[in-house]
Length: 253
Image (cartoon, rainbow, N blue to C red; front, side):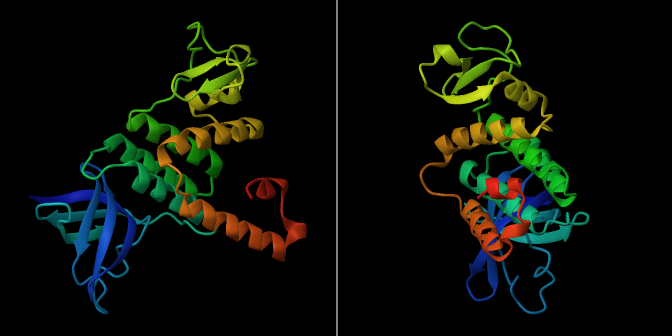
């Protein structure tokens, strides 16, 4: 198989042999893909500073089996300015894709959602909201979409002022009918997530708690590396600059 002009991004890479790289990539039409970039670590290779996370690429690859060979890679526009806290957010998105997507399983809409999320992170715009929206779309794309418009017990529309318990295998039910099971969440938060309009701090907090619980069912017991890195960075900052931390920053520890 030979593929040319395929939009892609690097999710992760590590050394392969003496001069090559083994790349995990997310591509528009071929999904998650492992490729070998031969000679990419040589001193004068043009790929050394191209095959980096978050850089939009157009690639070519060829070969059979699980690890085809990268035949071309060029930047497809400027990389989003992802640094500081946004860097950890970007690494988190990449890790979700690595953990939850199967190789060679196309996810064209999710590829666009990923590119959109990186753009929002690079702009420093609503980072928490960008993460929650991407998590929602990721679950939808892998077949575990959320019920966000009606109560699954009675089929009636969700009410913003009512409290619910979200049952992971079913969806939201009135809190009084759940016998303490599921994740506590207000109707307003579920409706805001459905509209992908997450601007209220209390709503963001509830939605973050909900999404973390739902994703944990699919991620298994192994902790996310990106989350641990962010937590250690936050703790270090708190020790160095305790008087300058905001309540929002402390809540992420």
